[in-house]
Length: 440
Image (cartoon, rainbow, N blue to C red):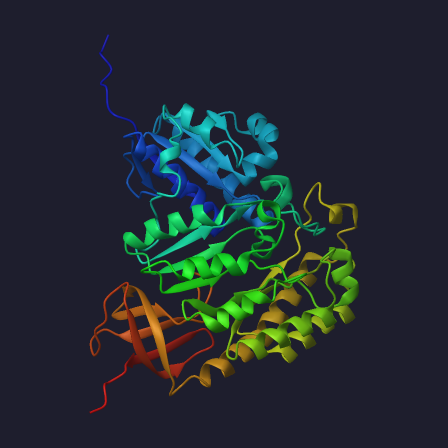
């Protein structure tokens, strides 16, 4: 009998879904490395013998991607390419029992709040002293900062509370400690994320304290940009705009998912806000913070959405001239309130409406970008690609927004640094420019 060679385990963590999952994976990797384990993130090498897949279960496309990834690595395990396969995250939280039945090749499934149990399976201990000291998988100059977990909202289409539980804020002191740690390692931009930013503080402090948190993070030495993502519009804490106007470190940028603009659809969605209240909030934001970049998302094809209701949404987008828009097609999710409704908008109609709405926004984006030609934008550079330095202005978040492309042959900037860029050309979703020359 041959003696089996002993080798140290190597763990490959695969992350699917949103930036909140990225943070969860980073915390997992931090804990594993704190236990002196060899761990990589989304390695393209085939030398890891253990794989952990952090899944997304938000909508049909995300679930399909997660299941396909699990099946891919289950097949690798079957043929002996890896020794162990673990699954965590939202899909696992929501469908654990079904997944165990359908894909038994996985060694264990874990929910979103079961990090200590996953660590034990990986022969690691949960080290409390590592909280706030997470490693990052993004470029070294920016990081996501998750300020809370879960959601208390009752949107009828959303399954997030089923997967993430109720809202739990992290203390301001803990977040400042983590931000300071990240800044010491070279992070200049923080993207604040949560299931719902504007609820921050209600559970801990009995009042909304997002404004206080922003002041505290803006005071952290080394942090030059703080960016707000996933801010619910209903009962928005308007003092946030005072902070944005007063503190140069807080980007004049707001990710404000509105989902729709017809009152009947908003009511069926249980969004707790009307189109009129939404318009008032947007008007207030733009008056308080002139030039604020507003990113939003809309959901088309919700149960019962008529052509007239969709046209009201189109008119609203045309009227408001948003800087950035994302469009999703409604996904009929089990256990949500909307699941009790008939999913009566045909798939081809959902797709057609999504394309029509994005065509409207494409024209708006093109016009807004054209208007920036001749302006000078402060740009943070993320990478070099195909002969260009590629960065973002204050109006842009990584992965989802515009980029600024600067020819590397005629210009020089450093990755991770800011530079003033004169915009010389623009398309619908990108800007082109050159480093501004100093005047004599």
